[in-house]
Length: 192
Image (cartoon, rainbow, N blue to C red; front, side):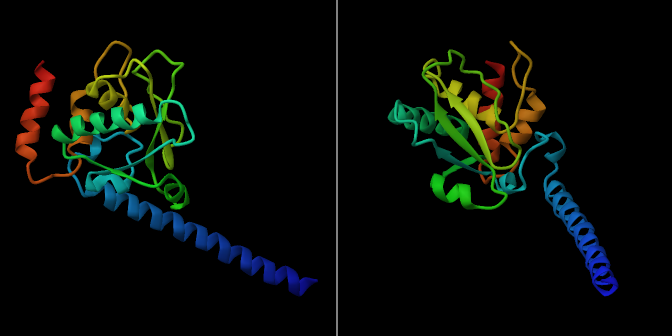
């Protein structure tokens, strides 16, 4: 019995040391990700490391039978709207594959025929699936883009717009080749 206790004690210390080591390794990864870009200080708190390349993965809720074609059409228009005015690129994933990838954060578009607001700041997990609800009143590409920005982690007070510094950091987290043209387009929207 005493020999078993000593073995468990050693294994327990080993386990604790491994956990401490993994926590430190996780901090190193997080710090290096945050230091890659000068705008990272202004990014949303839950901005995933995987999005620093400017590629934002997304899936559609195909289990929502009603409105799936409308959802796909609206989201494509919203993504095109954002891609023309930012360095972001939206990449569609198979929902069954996205769910299986460990520590993978992606936008999960769902259509709701019940809700009446297009400005729905809702996602419940910083890592994994981030719900973006598209409603019947979200018919303009800019409205879908707005809902997408909430899914990216941007927030604003009621009846206000997004903070310009935070929005710019998220939209230009990656320096794309045509950044100057896209920055002018971003500035044009902000002034109008």
